[in-house]
Image 1: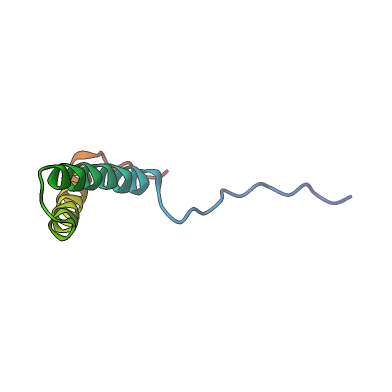
Image 2: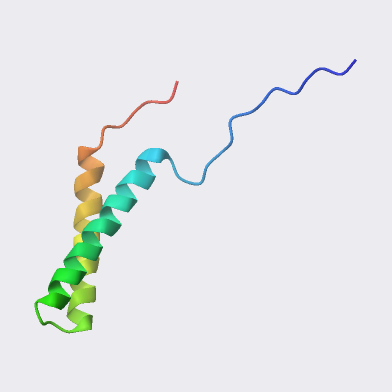
Length: 71
């Protein structure tokens, strides 16, 4: 009789921590781009503001979100 297969943990492309950090960065970038655009600036300037906000937010949240060691 064959032994039942043991379920292996699936490998994900990104960890939950990385996903949360990137989503928070995207939300920050969207808000910065929208506010810059609503302030009457051009789309190019809004895109640059969103890009800069994304980089700063990812750096900030990387320091802020606790790193959890895998067992």
